[in-house]
Every structure is written in structure tokens, then in C-alpha cells.
Length: 241
Ligand SMILES: C[S@@+](CC[C@H](N)C(=O)[O-])C[C@H]1O[C@@H](n2cnc3c(N)ncnc32)[C@H](O)[C@@H]1O
Image (cartoon, rainbow, N blue to C red; front, side, top):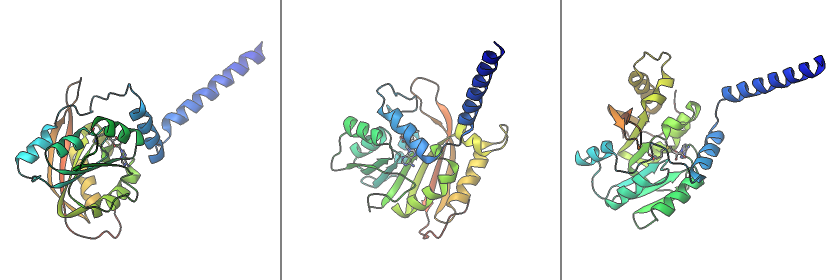
């Protein structure tokens, strides 16, 4: 009787330890890719942040003349393709990529490729399968989803595809920026700005850093940051963090 009790107790304890280890495990880029591939491959995946209408923050940049008509744009981590397709409809020359094959399948199905719209399965932190360069890079929620230790690879990889004087526009949720500041009371904007500055200092200058609200489908919009970086033309020789 005691033996059975002990056996069950040990079994439960082992299960608990395994669960704790799993929770603590740091997500690698491969874990993330598998996660995203699974999500985008599921018919039920309908995240609140998925775009169903044109984002206000990008509309304002267009109205301000920062994205001139016909400009070449790369959508980094394009998900199911809404923004890339809408920009292509507005006559931008758009290349969109995502490392989740299932995201690109969905994007191709939702918004087929055409003369101004090309998709690739590609990882923002690894050599890219195209040689084009772009005036504008847009990253809505991709850098913010990358494990921190992959941020320098992102910079090394993305900097060369943005033309000198071109812009990299990053949308980053405040909730994620919180991880950068030790205390929940800190101003996450300051920590994020500092992180972005150090990360990109060799190749980009921060020209704007604003608080914005990120559109959400069914919930209230969520606070975030719009970061605009201008490519300074420097070549990369290593990135500091
Ligand atoms: C929060 S979603 C945003 C998707 C899209 N930009 C949007 O606004 O709807 C982040 C996207 O980045 C993609 N992603 C994450 N890490 C990536 C990487 N290293 N290279 C390419 N895509 C990546 C994910 O597969 C996912 O589709």
C-alpha cells in the first residue's frame, strides 16, 4: 500500500518537475518557427492583432509623404499578407516574407502574387533568398516576437536590404517591450528606445519613436511603439548589444 502511494507520489513529482522545466525553457528561434508554422497552419488561428483594415500608423506615414508612390517595400514577417497586399494595391512594389511556410501559403491564397507583390518563405535572421534592396522596410510585430539573442542577426541581415537613406518602420507592442525593463514601473518606451539605439547604431539612425495604439480585432487596441529608422549607409562589421 505504502509502495503504491510512494510510486504515485514520485510519478506526480516527476510530472511537476518536467512541467516546470518546460515552462522555464527559453524559446529558441526553431521553437518559435515551429510555433508560428503550427498556428498559421490551423484554420482556427484568428489572432486579434491580425490586420483586417489598413493600419492607421502606416496610413499617416503615407499621408505625411514618407512612403512615396511606387516605392519598393519589404514586409518583414508578413503573416497572412494583408498589409503587403494592400500596399501593392496602392501601387507600391512589395516583397513580403515570413519564416512560417504556412503563413506564406495563407498569404498566397488570400492575396495572390502579381506584378507588384511577391512572397518568399524566409527567415529575417538568415541569408535571404532574394537580392533586391528596398526604400522601405516594414516590420509589424516581427522583431518583437524574436528571441532577444537573435536581434543582432536580424540587424545584420536586414540592414543590407534597406537602401541608403531608406526607412525601416518597426511596430513593437508595449507588452513585449516590458520584458526589456527590469521593473514593471519603468517606462518601457525608454528601455526599448535604448535597446533599439544600441542594436541599430551602426546602420540606422532613429528618426522617430512614438507611442501608438495597435489595432486589435475583437479587443481594445493595445499600446505599442512606432519606430522609424533611417539607413545611414554604413556597412556592417558586427553588431553590439
Ligand atoms: C505578430 S505576427 C505579425 C504578422 C504581420 N506582420 C501582421 O502585422 O499581421 C509576427 C510574424 O512574424 C513572423 N516571424 C517571426 N520571426 C520571424 C523571422 N525570424 N523571420 C521571418 N518571419 C518571422 C511570424 O511567423 C509571424 O507571422
